[in-house]
Length: 141
View 1 (cartoon, rainbow, N blue to C red):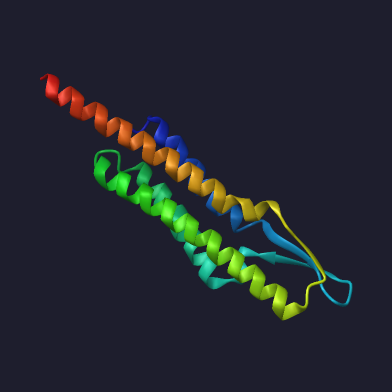
View 2: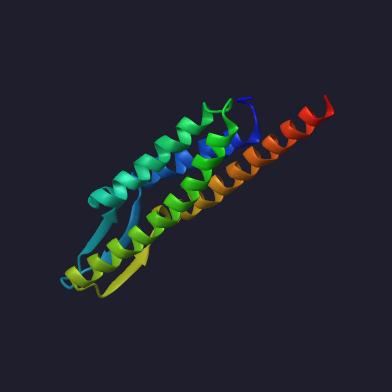
């Protein structure tokens, strides 16, 4: 059942996490009128959470025979992605106070944990529907 729709959602969640590690999440102008980019790799905690979530999403693709574990990991991915958003906001706010930021904007890389929440949710919904379908077919036998 590797060709199910939740496989696409898990792949997209993993891709969103891995691309977040390469893109800028915040762009700021510091006091000396110089621009500075903030990457997810600058925070060890944020980087490790994002990589762990990406690896978990990739591993969930191959757990198609164990739908209950796949569902639990998808829900854990939603919770972990919410935590990643909180860590990201905390890290950027800490960066703002340390550097004395005058002007700063969030970049596209900051949206990827939110996309991961959506993709993990859609994958969990797909796994739940598959489990429900299998249980209804077992009842018919």
